[in-house]
Length: 158
Image (cartoon, rainbow, N blue to C red):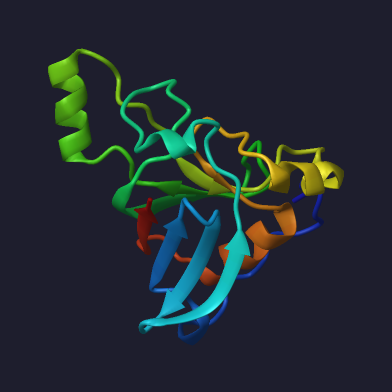
């Protein structure tokens, strides 16, 4: 299958090399892969354009969520290289949105840079440019893809 930027899809690593937790620290703009309580990889990230303004509350606020979620699907045909979908919004966030009569937002992912823009990765790493997602370079996304199975818990911390 032909892909933007890479000839093939990266193969998942053996279970002994897979993460059992992803921690994103919004303040330090980092994503850490954990296994059995030990960090084994850490990467710089870009976040939503308003990530420092607190947790995501509604669609279009450009904030990155905060809380505990999980990877609920993987997309090998993403507009952003590869992507891992995060289970935002949770039941509480959906209820708050209903009470406020606004949509909570959706499609929060860990992903690479836009297809065809990989050469621009150094700039994408220096700014927060997403609508609330967690973005990394395409090469880093390929590594994360190999280490993170569906169902992996994700902690998005302030």
